[in-house]
Image 1 (tube, rainbow, N blue to C red):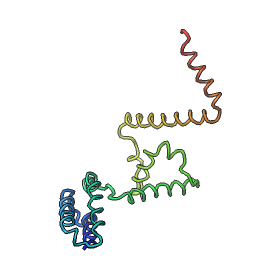
Image 2 (cartoon, rainbow, N blue to C red):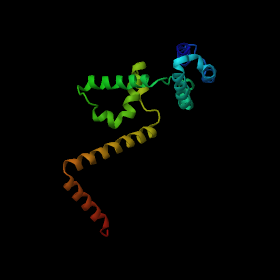
Image 3 (tube, one colour):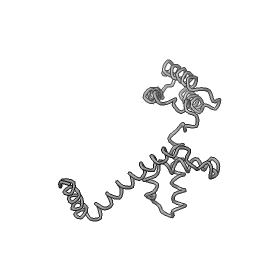
Length: 177
């Protein structure tokens, strides 16, 4: 009894028919109701059915979000494959095993750009910023990350000199102009 229920749940969540989120939710809820009602028929797997019901309840609030947002991956496996693919391409282009610092500092831009260029090639006109002010704001955010990283590197290289420089800057600010 339990195996057909699990396979039915997988078919519902796979959503090969591309029904909308409320319909997927309704179908799964109907199946879970049947499972709860007939759990004793699962024999030795009744405890596994209970566990399946419990886990389904705990994931319920976010379980159907992927059916509401077009293109959103249904599983973490899809997301892992996306990020793994990006890491693979970074390793191929840089020759490094670890993520380059550029990916760490500018990952929010590079991941989106990499995903977009995999879908189709882009021309120069498409790459030009449509809103220069928004582009400048994004550049400032990325530059701020670089400044924080640079300060951390300076501190790790020579903490004493870094702290002395900070004290000197603070002392200059405290002096009357």
